[in-house]
Structure formats: C-alpha cells, structure tokens
Amino acid sequence: MEERNKVLHVSKYMEEQRQACLMRLTSPFGAQLRMNRSIQVEGSFANIKEDMGLRRYSHRGKENVLTESIIVALAYNISRFDRRVKAGRTGLHLYDLKTAA
Image 1 (spheres, rainbow, N blue to C red):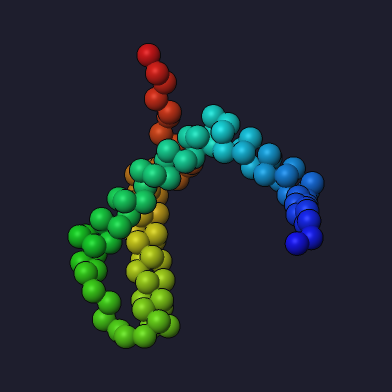
Image 2: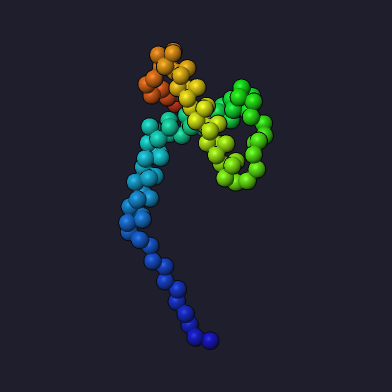
C-alpha cells in the first residue's frame, strides 16, 4: 500500500469571523442578551397556548400551517406592543445579569 498524507485547509477569514463571534458572545452584553432570550421564549409559547387559546392548527398542509403560525405571531407581537405602549415602556429593557457573591 502506498503512503497517503491527508491535508486540512482552514480558511483564515472563517477563523477571524469565528473569533469575532466568540468575543461578541462572551462579552457581558452578549451574555445579557443570551440570558434574556432564554427567559422570553418560553413565556411567549405559554401565552400563545393559554391566553390566545391556540392548541391545534385549524388548517392542513405546510403552507397553511406556516401562514397560521405567522398570523398568530403577528397578533402576539401587536398585542405585546400595545401593552407596552399603554404602559409607557417602549424602550429596550433587558434584565441585568446576576453577579456571583
């Protein structure tokens, strides 16, 4: 058998982009955004299921289900924005990160 050597080429641009992305993710602001996102997602699904009463889709087919999902998401976002406008909280509000004691 002949001897074969495998060569791995890594893009320098990709490595630079990966490092920049890692720096953004590990920054304090990036950690705060990740923490806030994890809090907000479950609440949205719970509100759509309980408050809006969406337990099943009323149409069949991928396109119809996608359309219904988009309409529900728009309705949820509009109602959420309406509540914020009425309460006077239209700015960007993020929960603060907890610091270890």
